[in-house]
Length: 164
Image 1: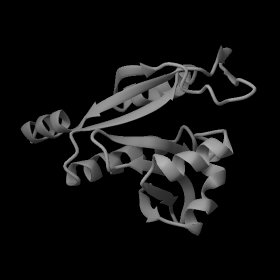
Image 2: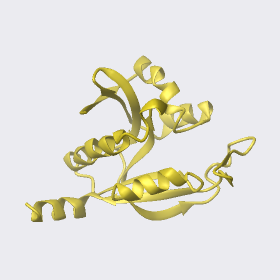
Image 3: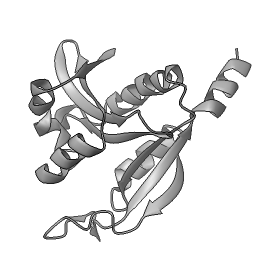
Image 4: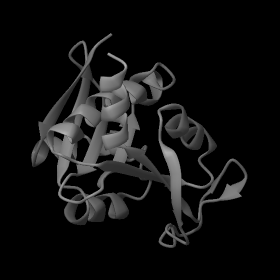
């Protein structure tokens, strides 16, 4: 299984809304994010079928994964890890030193996932999800704060080259 990330714009981004709403459940927050935070959107394909989407903010340092979504029927199959394995070399090409990503403090599976992929806890954005009305609950925990993880691209490149 080898995925392909393709940069998309305009109408093609709108076609990814159903997938992106898996990462950001509020459509108005998603639209705001696409207009104000993300500068690049990718369609993720596996064998010609759209299986995911990711939005990035490359124009900042550190760069940031804003939304990362995998189709519900493909979750747990390693696609999220493959997406990250495509984004990290892209970040190196763009001379980025660090990559960050945030997830709700209630998103236990995401917290585990990012750490397994080499991201480390960086900081907390308190009350980040203030806009969710009524407040959402996930895993029995109110969705309220965001945990931000970081991946040190520079250190990763150094350790990778010293292992070869």
